Length: 266
Picture 1 (cartoon, rainbow, N blue to C red):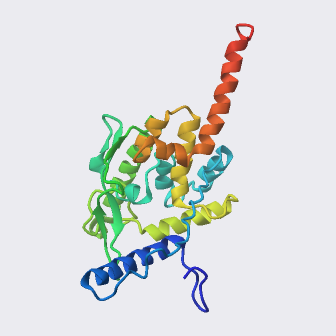
Picture 2: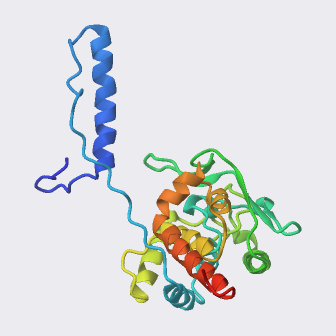
Picture 3: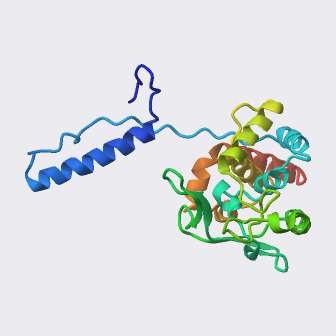
């Protein structure tokens, strides 16, 4: 599994560890029943989990990305995600009743995912860590959402009886006939746009990383960023974006030096 074989690609470390977990449980049960004396999966040397690479867009790449998606069918969802940091399944499952224009907030408490079986349909499930959170995006983001709501209402009137939400009503982001987006199609499109701006391998999740880095660099404290991203702890956020916080420390030292110079230095 680790090295692959003729006609089959090698499996990722996580997949191999998942297979081992299933086998280990089965063998442990066999030991309990007395079928075998010991678990042959014990002490197996598992491959290390590789840390996923993060590719947040630079400011120049963000500008190029926004230019590239102008007029694109997924322009709004890409923009909103880049400035809120929602996970793909969270933003694709966002419904209007979770958007409060009066208070300027977005409530995240579920995600839209496809059932993992042949012919599986999309349905709402609890969040990845089952911790609902409330976002307070910038007024510009809320303005884009207002425009999205107006545009969607016009589209619904235009297609009339052809509007079909497939049993998932009130989604913020839908195709021209009211249905949810297909996740794979959205992610495929963002990869194409990445290549257009010279960023190979761009993923939807990289928009989330882009938001996190931009938030930290513009002065948001780690606790706020952690809360907005839905991370379990601030320590997890710090570990994930250590490179960014290191740059922030350097910037802080430079700002302090400028401040001290006003008093003649030390």
